[in-house]
Image 1 (cartoon, rainbow, N blue to C red):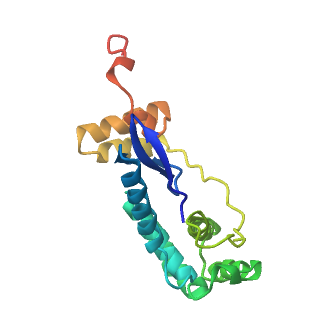
Image 2 (cartoon, rainbow, N blue to C red; image 1 turned 180 degrees about the vertical axis):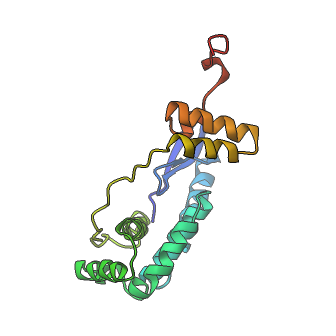
Length: 205
């Protein structure tokens, strides 16, 4: 279970704990200490009640997926990864997973023609789910999950003709502008989207 502590913030008691992503939660509990302790007990009970009754890898992974969804994170890739791993790891308990099990999974994915990058991502989600169970206090230690060697990043540079076709295919003006900025600056998408008008010199173009 997450450690939930009693603290004070802006003159009121509050419950303090950190979620699996490291984000701090600090809901107010009022100024009455006795009532605050009662509320904290309820928070702890609520967190503990989410512990799966049977701590199989499948139950832990489902809880991890649900937690990510409640945090507003996209879980589509997490769920898709589990569709591939379920038959291999789902029935197991965390402590039963060995390096040989991971090697067998990697080999099975290789035999299926799956890229090592995809397998790396899938087993990475499994690692995250088991680390989530440790942070919740459901298991003492997460087993070692061997990952295949991650392939290097793929690089592809557009030719002038490809860049022109990309621009011509953009129907919306704001999309065309985004593509122009990306091609001209090689900036990250997030950096381009965060660009403000005060950083643009329109007179000098």
